[in-house]
Image 1 (tube, each protein chain N blue to C red):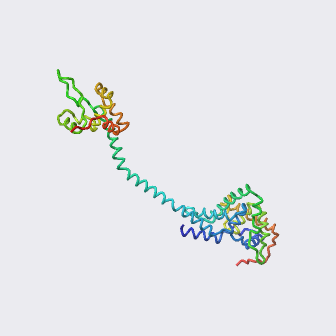
Image 2: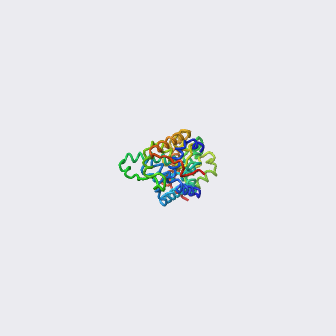
Image 3: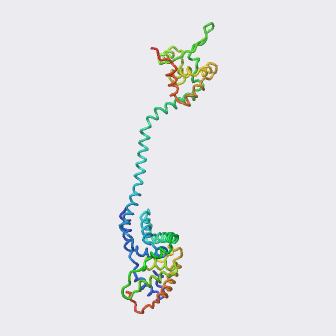
Length: 189
Length: 168
């Protein structure tokens, strides 16, 4: 302390005299202080564990729910995506019935409401699966059967996909499945 | 808690707690709570300050000023009644009387008093005191000298020619 040396002699002595006085003993309760420090340390130390636990739980939850989410949501979205991507050639009722011949009776729409009919239609060349919507046939026919207006539009419109696509985008395939159960006849064979 | 921090707390309690309480008494009547809070705050610092003692004095100063304001808002007369009579241990031998020294120090201007306490009993150097009170080290030294002179006048000290603490 070079600055201390510049003090006048009388102040220097006074300084030594004052320094000889000891401040009153501290009244800090050491036990209380140590308990408080322990509490602080415990509270501070538990924070990383909380974060780690929360992160692990979230990860487990996500991994556990993922298969269920993928099986339902992605199937529905895939359906909607396909219907919108292939909209112009999504569902052509013409492919479900033979071309009209001269003198032949007017074609009637044929309902394919089970897998066997579907396979037969494909095998006989009556139906081209490459040009159709990737929807199980009974769903498509269920839509046509349950919505007469839509069916009429399909008959008159060159692009019949929007009436079919719209409910699919809105509700997925669940309502179609319900409609199919209600409105289509059960497979006979 | 780390071993280093515990050792630091132990060191502070043994060497600085009394001086810190004396320092805090400039502003508040319950200095032990302020010092305890400051020590707890010190242990929460990560990393620890380079000069923990200087840091503690800063924290005690802030806490004591804040506590003093709160006390003033509550009951001034209670604070005065709670103030201990002596700030120093009873003197032995030719040393100054503790009560007289307490009164003289209490009457000293605050800016002189805090520099005196930090230097004499806290052991801070003048650059640390300058940082603490917000002035240069030269200004801190001037305040210190002025405070000593004022105290000497109040105490009526006639320093003996033969020092009771001879220089070795």
